[in-house]
Image (cartoon, rainbow, N blue to C red; front, side, top):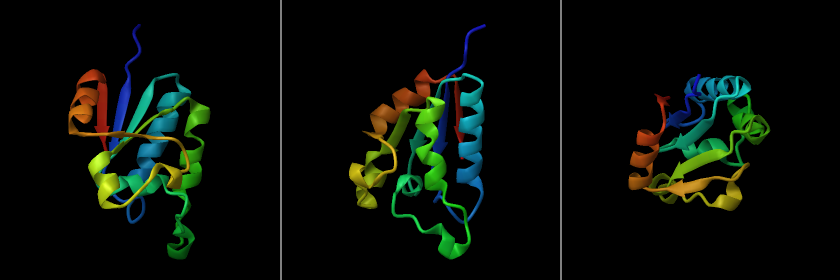
Length: 120
């Protein structure tokens, strides 16, 4: 049986609702079953990877610590929409794990090339 590769697209801010946590749970679960997983962070979601998060101020668990564990699950294809990073002034050295910038054309190809695309 051929494995399905999964692309998870996150577009919401990491805190304020459960979407980011749910997406990370799906990513870790799929990876634990050996499925190839890629993450694409768009719009407000790139903040999820920032080292400087302080969610304890709003009594939330720090999701950056979960993100830092993604490579241990072989989730190493992490992409950030270039436009979102520019708007939020995010640089690669501010991230808890390595990521790659992608533009609209790259995103279209990624969506086409994955068997399963889930948006959070």
